Length: 116
Image (cartoon, rainbow, N blue to C red; front, side):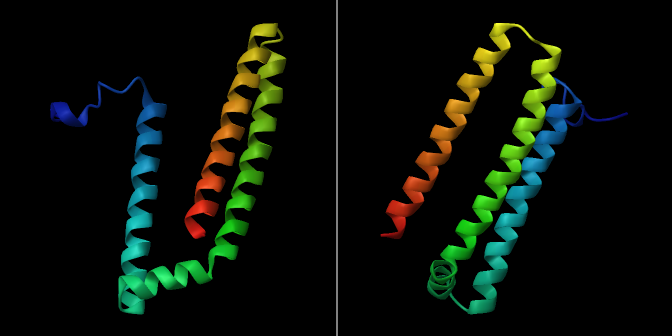
């Protein structure tokens, strides 16, 4: 018999559980990567300096992630628009696209301002 807290009844479905596990795994990998980097370089200050020196490569990495995510979004949008041809779906997509673009611009502007 499984304990009640392992049943995950509070989640709306299996997809939410998988997304939650993926998010936890990504956070764990990020924490471990930072701890290993600090350990390898000897101090937090040296780790911070290395991160600043590699900022251009991290920016290129983010741009690649944005491009892949954009491609996936276009693929998903085409499929969903074919399934739901009414105008409401188009408006929902447009609002989501504007919100995502604004969030990315805000993120990159905040990173740019932190670097200066």
